[in-house]
Structure formats: C-alpha cells, structure tokens
Image (cartoon, rainbow, N blue to C red):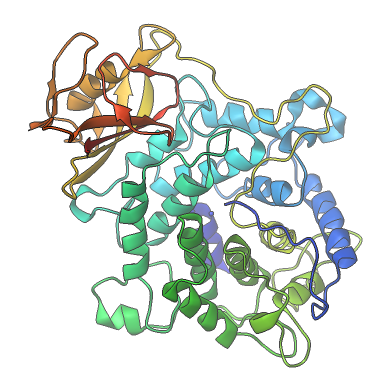
Length: 465
C-alpha cells in the first residue's frame, strides 16, 4: 500500500466511455451509473472547507480525473454551495503560486498537475501568467537519454510524461506536441516492456535481469495507456502482449487482477484505466472470467453504498480516499485524464486559462528543435515578455541562454528583425529543406522571427522539406 501511494505522489487521456455494454457483461449500465453517482458523492465529501483537494504532501488532487470521467465538472464542486470556493478555482490558485509544488520538485509533480488541471478545465499550459505546466515538464527532458523525462531509473516519470503531454490536449482538442517527440517517448516505452508483457515503475531497458523480472498491474495499466494516448493502436504487438499479461493475472472467482501487492482496488483501478484508455472493454472477451466475473465487477464490489467510497483491500471495513478515486475513475470509463465536462453552474465556462502574457512577468514556454537528422532537442525556455504577445525570434534568442536543459538553441540567423529564419544551430536552409515552425500542434509553416507567440504556446521547430 505504501509503495502504491508513493507512486500516486510521484505521478497519473481521453476517457473511453462505457455506454452500452455487451450482453455478456455482468455489471449493468444501471449498476455502473449508481456506482458513479455514489462515488461522486463520496469524493465531494473529501473537499476541505476552503474548497481544496490538493495541498502539501499526499493529497486528493487525483479526484479531478475521477470527477471528469464521471461527468462532474470541478467548478461545480463547492463546499456548502459556496461557488467562490469551487474546487477548480482553488486548485488553479494553488498551481499559480510560486512556492508550488515544493522547493525540490520532481517531474511527476508537474505531470500529475497537468493531468488533473486538464480534467478540471484548467488549460495546463496557461494556468497563469507565470505557470505553464507543459513547459515545466519539458525542463526534465534527459538530453543524454532522449525520450526519458526525469531520471531514467524512475521509469514512471516517462510513462506519465506520455500521459500528460499527449492526454492534455489543447482546448480545441489538438495534440500539443510534435510527432518527433511522441516517437522518442514511444521508443522508450517499448524498450522498457518486460518479457512477460508488462511493466513496472523502474527502468528495465538494457537490463536483462530487470526485463525478466515480474511486472506489476499498476504500471502495466499506466504504460498501456501511455502507448495508446501516444497514438499506438490497441492492436499493436506491445499492447496485445500487455493485454495478455493482464488477462493472465485475472482471478476467475472475483474478476480482480492479482497484483504484486495482492488484490486491491488501486492496482485494479489502474489496470482498468489502462484498458479504458486503449478502447478495450474490461467487461467482455478476455476480461470476462469463466465464472462470469469482470474487473469492473470487482471494483463495484469494493464500494460501500450508499456512502460511495471504495475500500483498498477486500477485508477493509472503511473506505480509502485513494482507492475511491482510482476505483471511480476506472468504473466511470476513464483513463488517467478526461476532457472536462460542461459545467452545470450558470455562467461557468468549460475552460479557464491565462489569455495573454503579462508584460514584465517572467514565464516559460515549451520548445522542441528537430534538425531532421534524428537530433531532437527539448527544453523549457524562460523569458520575460515586454507585451501581451512575443515572437518566435524572441523565444529562440532567449533559448540560447535561458533554456532548461541547456543547448536547445545555440545560434539563430538572422539575429534580429522579423524575417525568415535561414539558419538555426548552424544548420542552414537548403532548397526545399528549410526551418519550419508549428504552434500548439498546428501545421508546420515557414519559420520567421516575427511569427507571433502567445502565452502558453507549445512551439515546435523542425528542418526539412
């Protein structure tokens, strides 16, 4: 249990909605609806009097991913109906503070926040004039081990980078990051798959002993979801092998997965969320046991009703906050994040975000530079804008001396003006192969110093035809 909670702190796609279930499924749509209703009621009871779910240390911010999967907008969750303390506003204020997350943050702090901010209806790249969670995550790119985020030994940091960077789309539903970055992460996800078809939280790539070690249910669900949200189909060989691994851990009499930590709600919730994210129904086919049980049956059996909380172990006599979050998100059909539902609160928008730069306020932007020869550079660029917008030239200039990790940009030609960029990092335009730029996953067009960049934009620059 302690290791599972530690992963929750260290860490966390679009939801796969279980609407109509096949006749073979044993938990009916009505039972799932009741579970969702009661689960939401319980999660609302976890809200503090000041409206918060997140704070210092181990907190309940994963509740936002569960609320969204269950169709409840975070802005509609307010203590005693006091809308001034609604959960979304309080969470956004927390993420905007300079002291968040701590004096010694790790990459999964920002990945967890990205997934939950997105589910709460907060654009993670535009939390405030100074907070860009996408750029915060980019800062942990491992230059010497391209594709990893944070120390490679902690593989879960890379899994959740895939979940956050691919799952938290733009407000219009566009994937923010370029394909070159997605491909680099996918390569690392594949390289860490164990011989048994699953994954665990530590690095296995290049280590025969680790690759031969037993996988766990939790990280297999998360890594499957990471592959699928990165664009890898559920019919891909690695996902098929992962699915077979999960099937091999099913307990026929209950529908539970037998994890390394024994049968528990959190591990089962992560596994089901992985299946949901990959569009694999956990109530039929390979996941309907010979005794007519499914993983969803197990999760619902772990729920106290009408209280709505889920217990961690089958023998527990009281609910656990974390088990209730993981259980509800899975039963509701969610992966590790979901598009925020439309609010019921009158006048409340689906999304809140910073609309422009604040002149004189330092901020960060996410930047990738692809030289077309397989040398991808990823960094977070710090700059202090002088107006409500900035330019691509200003971002690239700032990246020369204020990028984390360093070396993202070494030189830009021309060094001033608004014209076409003719050379970057010593590589010049040549015929039809030129430097092009994309903003927030949009089409690549000719890169010019004067290209407008807005607050929170995710910038990709690449050389090629």
